Amino acid sequence: MKNDETLKRITLAHGAGGTIMQELIKRYILKYLGGSDAEVPLEALDDAAVIDDIVLKSDSHTVKPLFFPGGDIGRLAVAGTINDIAVMGAEPIALSAGFIFEEGFPVTDFEKILKSMSETCREAGIHIITGDTKVVEKGALEKFFINTSGIGKRNNALEKNITEVKKYREFNSRWLLDSNLKEGDKIIVSGAVGDHGIAILSFREGYGFESEITSDVAPLNKLIAQLLDVGGVVAMKDPTRGGLANTLNEWSEKSNIGILVQEDNIPIHGGVRAACEMLGIDPLEIGNEGKVVIAVVPPKAEEVLAVLKETKEGKDAQIIGEATKKFKEVVLETSVGGKRILAPPAGDPVPRIC
Ligand code: MG
Image (cartoon, rainbow, N blue to C red; front, side):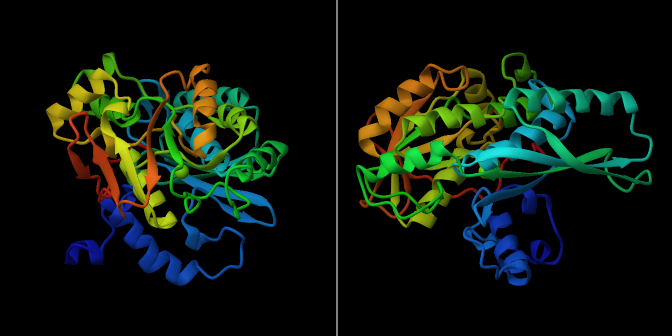
């Protein structure tokens, strides 16, 4: 870690989804909690784990403020866990929810959050089937946190998808893992990046961009099931904390391959671009909560893209690049042919967004 302070105490950067958080996980969490013989274990640091064909995921949500343009902590908690299970190629089947309140939290706000969770569950076709409530004294934490966990299972759509992949290349994985990319795989992003983080930051700090930018938070399991039905998908990831830059770098590192991205093909809304220019932050490092990045065997890329574009969540989808052996890193290419390395971000530039 970078300096003495980050070694001794937990900082906000340790929860920001980038290289600083990764180092905390690798140096401390894996040291004590690693070592299982799960099919996809903790050490894989993938979107979720797999044991005995059950996909398992846990997520804590500390977003500030609790209600933001386009969503709230309840919708975020439900969608975030569903999406992490779905991007493994699994069908999410049930969730748990643990609520931690600070003494004095308004019951009317809790009811609004529960209503939002219920609506998001209905949208995704899933239920919360177990949970927990705890209350801490005033001042012990900031108002309200949620932890959601979820399980998912293999289904026919995943089998069909993998059968399709195998028509075009060797594929030894049973799940859609970060380590599955091979040379030539096309990379698709399902829509504009940066909306969630910028909507929250702008609303929280009063910058005013939130009039045109709202969070993209949404459950994507039904969309993902449609893509698996087309087939040819080798990996998927929801570009949450650390944004697209973090997703692509995790893929590159774990698949041991370079990724070349056409910068101009990455969809970014004008308001997000303007806010990022004003604040001096990179929209590619900002967390999203309703987007998926998809790696597809080349012959199926256009077909997957076409299906995406017919959906509400995927109408702005684009093929943004491909895996390549020409580099080891993630490289951005501009329309005039300039190239630069897209480094793994130290953390999401916007704290407390999920
Ligand atoms: Mg994820």
